[in-house]
Image 1 (cartoon, helix red, strand yellow):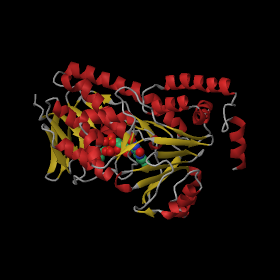
Image 2 (cartoon, rainbow, N blue to C red):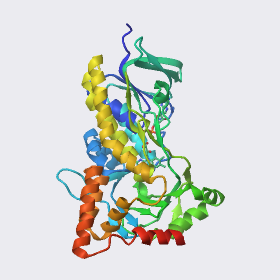
Image 3 (cartoon, rainbow, N blue to C red):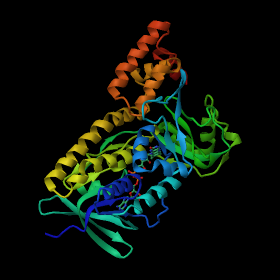
Image 4 (cartoon, helix red, strand yellow):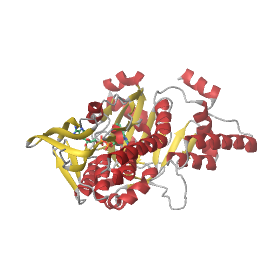
Length: 427
Ligand SMILES: Cc1cc2nc3c(=O)[nH]c(=O)nc-3n(C[C@H](O)[C@H](O)[C@H](O)COP(=O)(O)OP(=O)(O)OC[C@H]3O[C@@H](n4cnc5c(N)ncnc54)[C@H](O)[C@@H]3O)c2cc1C
């Protein structure tokens, strides 16, 4: 039998891949980290990089939080607007758990994370190396990758291959792992602006306009990212006059930013098709992390955090098992279960909302009560920080709605039922 050259080969040196590589190496394993881009400064352009508070404990454990802060990352939090008004999405103070996430542009974030992984003893970073094929053992399990690098074709054997190669994952495709696809009926455009003060200072703003969505995220370097996700029914209008449509949408927002007075400092970045994708994250000898395993509606800003966290879970469950095939199988099964348990319910909720249809009654009741019920708002904030489950959100949330109704006599919703239907009929 040929001895593997590395314990682990990780394909893709972005957020998920660098995290997996550095953490395996910290556990004493030898890791090859392959990246198809030849440029160590390369970064993902189509991302609004709002890293949720749920990822902050992981970033702190990795030692990345302080590097992000040193690079100028903004400690983020957000406010949500529905037709019933604004409420804060802060999860509130909890013992040992930070209330904030981070916002740092990917042009800074990606090189910073790559440099951190590259400098971790035990990691061999190979830029300009594209994986093209998987190697398989006589029993069919995956045991390495083949590809092309600056010096020509390469072949690397490993005990575990990690696919961290993004939403279009070639590695998943080669392994025969088909994505479960849930439709996404909005397209998106975004751009960066300077001199754009926001209504709530450093708090990000998210408008649920039904069916469209807009957001404003403050970032490092005094740059604010504006993005809109619009029902595909309006795509032709945006294609005809992108800037005009974008500016009018932001102009009309309640408490919206003064977009006409600000300076746009980037071109518009567009994304037309954003299907929600889930892939079973393991196969014999293989694990998928980050977007390769789960690419959920970007509106909710979960992907970067899930990239860091899924890589951490994978290493936690497999690092000590890698040299013994039966233990590795069990470790991979534990990772698959944890990934599914933690992320799939939220992903399904996100996907349900991304069809751009009317708001479901539960969401409507919660969102319409939260602006005048601070406890409910905090509960929703704790859900977005993934400190309570979907089930707990629904049960406790509806109890809060009922409580509010009983104690204040308020009707469930200024945006509720018939009010909303009549608004949408008019519009
Ligand atoms: C419009 C939009 C807005 C978003 N906004 C947010 C947000 O506000 N907050 C948030 O948390 N998330 C957001 N996301 C999601 C976020 O961008 C992703 O979840 C995150 O980048 C996933 O990281 P990753 O490391 O898994 O994959 P990626 O960042 O996609 O990296 C994959 C890497 O693999 C490399 N690669 C690919 N194929 C190969 C190969 N064959 N060989 C070698 N290397 C390869 C690529 O070059 C790349 O470096 C957004 C996404 C979109 C589309």
